[in-house]
Length: 465
Image (tube, rainbow, N blue to C red; front, side):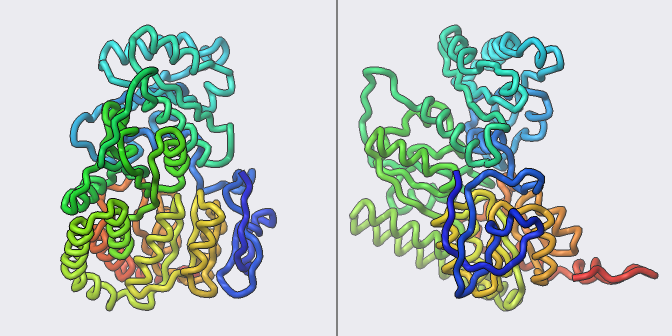
């Protein structure tokens, strides 16, 4: 998994072995390590392999998601995405085999088979995803064989997801396990035919706060229909129609590039990267999608939509820009596509980027990131809390954009925090989302609460920054 790319060196890591995973934007260039396993003992901000698989598959709305492991694995990942559904809500219910000590000693395959029978008979789902966890993987339960037998018994898709956490120290391996499960689900039956349509698939779109519906509205206005999203607001039946699309859009590159490459290899469907976060990215994506169809009327409709929406949001963006100019921001998110989009949005608001990093960025993505950052910006792969704390204080950051694990750290340091995590309920994509994001950054960054939080308590000392 190890990759590297050339980036400038300067910032000092808290743990010596992590030095090559931290660089500083500038003229001198060294190499940054990325996409490799987390360093033991560094308390990575990354999620585990199982969690990686769970966040990709969970938005399949009408499937049962059955966790084969201790109940805690299901509890702490229950409703893990802020995905909205236009139909079934079955995906919001978390199922677990609730493995106990007896199962660990004597094996949990019989219990898993019984649980599958129970959920199929009670809920009649069109598919069941069965996730392996560390415990079921360590004792060697053969979930593939159990799922195969259950599929034959119920004539239903029972899909194993081989996501035992100990397989790797990299969440991307969980993405791959989910991707393999999806490809197994959508594979046409032997002798089946595929009729191509003019519709598109939208990969790496999870409908957080209804964001898939927003992009769908834009695309419909210019004359394009979404076939199915992977996996926001998707159903098992819609996913099985995926091979009929004429184009695959990829937004979350970390979770879906591998899927797109396999769909191209197997069904001849080309793919392109898009990004609906931020007005410039949204406009650029709409133009590229319309250009794919080589239809003059469609391209004109896209330009009309972009001009209308840009004019509509400009006053609000300018208002927030006037208040945020010169403020310093830190970004730490899961994937590089999101980090790059946020960098562009914050710079558009006149802010300085002091620190940025990701859990799963790849070498070429860090190269792209470094090209749009100012000299002195710290770039960090697979961070740990000690490193984030050190650089947040050294760089005098005003606001941090991140996920649930970064929220507490920012608050503890008296720094504003904006949630851009996969469990959020606010839609931040598209033109409307850009205004919502700018407002959130403004009210958080400029809140007087942070100055008060850093003020000395009676008889105490001020918070060091």
